[in-house]
Image (cartoon, rainbow, N blue to C red; front, side, top):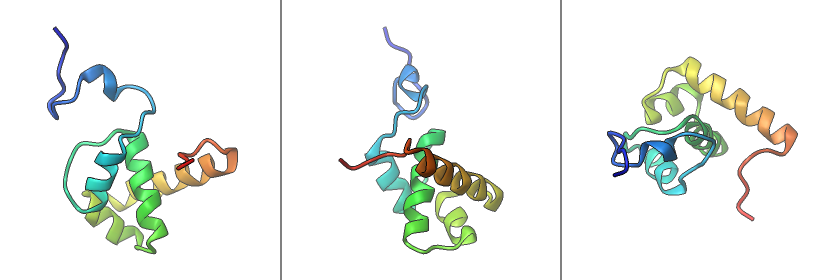
Length: 88
């Protein structure tokens, strides 16, 4: 029997740095849903690329502006180290 997270996903899947592209797509489209830290960072990265302000991004994702600022910084750090998500 596998343990389930409230979102319906298996709880073991929520650990780690996995990014569910479908979850990020839905969150960027303003659908409120639980995201992992890595998924939130990717959503913030995508909305930043669309030139949304910090406050607009926060409102769209249901986050505090300070949280968006922290995820933007994490996205910049991962770009510098080459650890970001790639479409390749």
